[in-house]
Length: 90
Image (tube, rainbow, N blue to C red; front, side, top):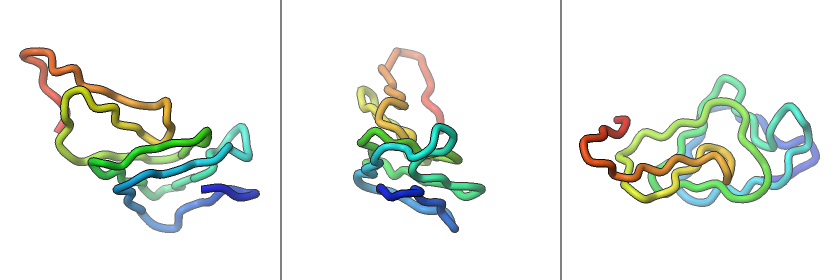
């Protein structure tokens, strides 16, 4: 996603593939802004590029060990290591 002013969602959206975010056009808001809506990242959804999502980013699926799950920025990730006795979020 790119553009002079970025974009603001007018409803919840879901991503099941690659979300490519170009640079942010503002220091205060990402290139994709959800407002009060939600960006739902599917199990195979991932984020690339230098831009950000500002707003609500959600994942509602089973999490596998050793996978980097992004949350609206390529550097905002979580990876579950599979530590014995640990419980992942559901």
